[in-house]
Length: 135
Image (tube, rainbow, N blue to C red; front, side, top):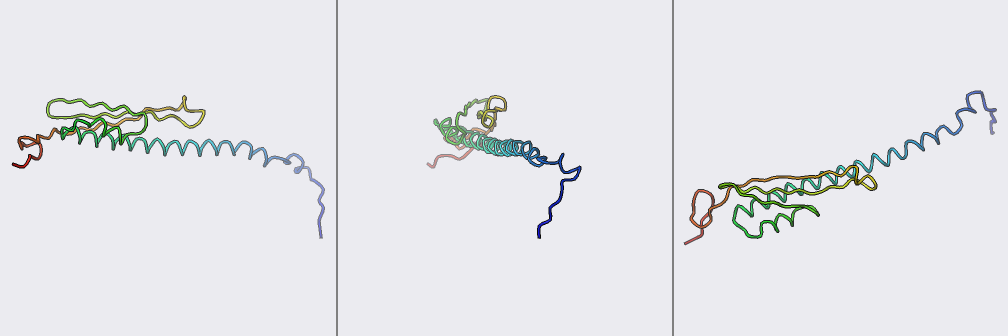
Protein backbone atom coordinates (compact mmCIF):
# COMPACT_ATOMS: atom_id res chain seq x y z
CA UNK A 1 0.00 0.00 0.00
CA UNK A 2 1.33 3.42 -0.93
CA UNK A 3 1.27 6.20 1.55
CA UNK A 4 0.90 9.65 0.15
CA UNK A 5 2.21 12.36 2.35
CA UNK A 6 1.56 15.94 1.84
CA UNK A 7 4.71 17.98 1.88
CA UNK A 8 5.14 19.50 5.29
CA UNK A 9 6.42 22.96 5.99
CA UNK A 10 10.07 21.74 6.07
CA UNK A 11 9.91 19.59 2.96
CA UNK A 12 9.30 22.25 0.34
CA UNK A 13 12.39 24.29 1.19
CA UNK A 14 14.68 21.21 1.29
CA UNK A 15 13.79 20.12 -2.25
CA UNK A 16 16.92 19.94 -4.43
CA UNK A 17 19.34 20.56 -1.58
CA UNK A 18 21.21 17.28 -2.16
CA UNK A 19 21.64 18.20 -5.82
CA UNK A 20 23.17 21.55 -4.86
CA UNK A 21 25.54 19.87 -2.40
CA UNK A 22 26.60 17.38 -5.06
CA UNK A 23 27.14 20.16 -7.60
CA UNK A 24 29.58 21.83 -5.19
CA UNK A 25 31.24 18.72 -3.78
CA UNK A 26 31.87 16.84 -7.02
CA UNK A 27 34.17 19.44 -8.64
CA UNK A 28 36.02 19.80 -5.35
CA UNK A 29 36.60 16.04 -5.24
CA UNK A 30 37.80 16.01 -8.86
CA UNK A 31 40.23 18.86 -8.09
CA UNK A 32 41.46 17.03 -4.98
CA UNK A 33 42.01 13.83 -6.98
CA UNK A 34 43.92 15.76 -9.67
CA UNK A 35 46.13 17.39 -7.04
CA UNK A 36 46.84 14.04 -5.38
CA UNK A 37 47.78 12.46 -8.70
CA UNK A 38 50.02 15.45 -9.51
CA UNK A 39 51.69 15.06 -6.11
CA UNK A 40 52.48 11.42 -6.84
CA UNK A 41 53.85 12.33 -10.29
CA UNK A 42 56.01 15.08 -8.75
CA UNK A 43 57.32 12.67 -6.10
CA UNK A 44 58.21 10.13 -8.79
CA UNK A 45 60.01 12.82 -10.81
CA UNK A 46 61.96 13.84 -7.70
CA UNK A 47 63.02 10.23 -7.18
CA UNK A 48 64.17 10.11 -10.82
CA UNK A 49 66.22 13.28 -10.24
CA UNK A 50 67.90 11.74 -7.19
CA UNK A 51 68.65 8.52 -9.08
CA UNK A 52 70.01 10.42 -12.08
CA UNK A 53 72.30 12.54 -9.90
CA UNK A 54 73.57 9.43 -8.10
CA UNK A 55 74.20 7.49 -11.31
CA UNK A 56 75.85 10.50 -12.95
CA UNK A 57 78.11 11.09 -9.94
CA UNK A 58 79.23 7.46 -9.92
CA UNK A 59 79.97 7.56 -13.66
CA UNK A 60 81.84 10.87 -13.40
CA UNK A 61 83.83 9.64 -10.39
CA UNK A 62 84.98 6.64 -12.44
CA UNK A 63 86.08 8.99 -15.20
CA UNK A 64 83.45 7.98 -17.75
CA UNK A 65 83.35 10.48 -20.58
CA UNK A 66 79.63 9.93 -21.11
CA UNK A 67 78.61 10.68 -17.50
CA UNK A 68 76.19 13.39 -18.64
CA UNK A 69 74.48 10.96 -21.03
CA UNK A 70 74.26 8.35 -18.27
CA UNK A 71 72.64 10.87 -15.93
CA UNK A 72 70.24 12.10 -18.62
CA UNK A 73 69.10 8.55 -19.35
CA UNK A 74 67.95 8.18 -15.74
CA UNK A 75 66.54 11.71 -15.42
CA UNK A 76 62.96 12.79 -16.08
CA UNK A 77 62.15 14.39 -19.46
CA UNK A 78 63.40 17.94 -19.86
CA UNK A 79 66.04 17.60 -17.15
CA UNK A 80 69.23 19.64 -17.13
CA UNK A 81 72.39 17.85 -15.94
CA UNK A 82 75.45 19.76 -14.72
CA UNK A 83 78.74 18.21 -13.64
CA UNK A 84 81.30 20.22 -11.69
CA UNK A 85 84.56 19.18 -10.09
CA UNK A 86 86.36 20.59 -7.09
CA UNK A 87 89.56 18.87 -6.04
CA UNK A 88 88.87 15.17 -5.64
CA UNK A 89 85.08 15.59 -5.60
CA UNK A 90 82.63 15.39 -8.48
CA UNK A 91 79.25 17.08 -8.07
CA UNK A 92 76.32 16.24 -10.34
CA UNK A 93 73.20 18.40 -10.25
CA UNK A 94 69.99 17.38 -12.00
CA UNK A 95 67.09 19.81 -12.34
CA UNK A 96 63.78 19.07 -14.05
CA UNK A 97 60.50 20.91 -14.49
CA UNK A 98 57.31 19.41 -13.11
CA UNK A 99 54.27 21.20 -14.57
CA UNK A 100 51.02 21.29 -12.67
CA UNK A 101 47.94 19.34 -13.69
CA UNK A 102 45.85 20.44 -16.66
CA UNK A 103 45.03 24.12 -16.89
CA UNK A 104 46.84 24.78 -13.61
CA UNK A 105 50.18 23.90 -15.22
CA UNK A 106 51.49 27.46 -15.31
CA UNK A 107 50.29 28.25 -11.80
CA UNK A 108 51.48 25.08 -10.04
CA UNK A 109 54.67 24.33 -11.99
CA UNK A 110 57.62 23.50 -9.74
CA UNK A 111 61.29 22.91 -10.42
CA UNK A 112 62.66 19.68 -8.94
CA UNK A 113 66.30 18.92 -8.41
CA UNK A 114 68.89 16.77 -6.73
CA UNK A 115 72.64 16.89 -6.20
CA UNK A 116 75.04 14.02 -5.64
CA UNK A 117 78.72 14.21 -4.74
CA UNK A 118 81.26 11.43 -5.22
CA UNK A 119 84.99 11.17 -4.67
CA UNK A 120 87.03 10.70 -7.80
CA UNK A 121 88.40 7.24 -8.23
CA UNK A 122 92.05 6.91 -9.12
CA UNK A 123 91.69 4.02 -11.55
CA UNK A 124 95.15 4.11 -13.11
CA UNK A 125 97.52 4.26 -10.13
CA UNK A 126 95.64 2.22 -7.57
CA UNK A 127 95.62 5.09 -5.10
CA UNK A 128 93.32 5.42 -2.13
CA UNK A 129 90.42 6.67 -4.26
CA UNK A 130 89.46 3.43 -6.00
CA UNK A 131 90.42 0.23 -7.73
CA UNK A 132 93.48 -0.14 -9.90
CA UNK A 133 93.91 -1.70 -13.32
CA UNK A 134 95.33 -5.24 -13.19
CA UNK A 135 99.01 -5.52 -14.16
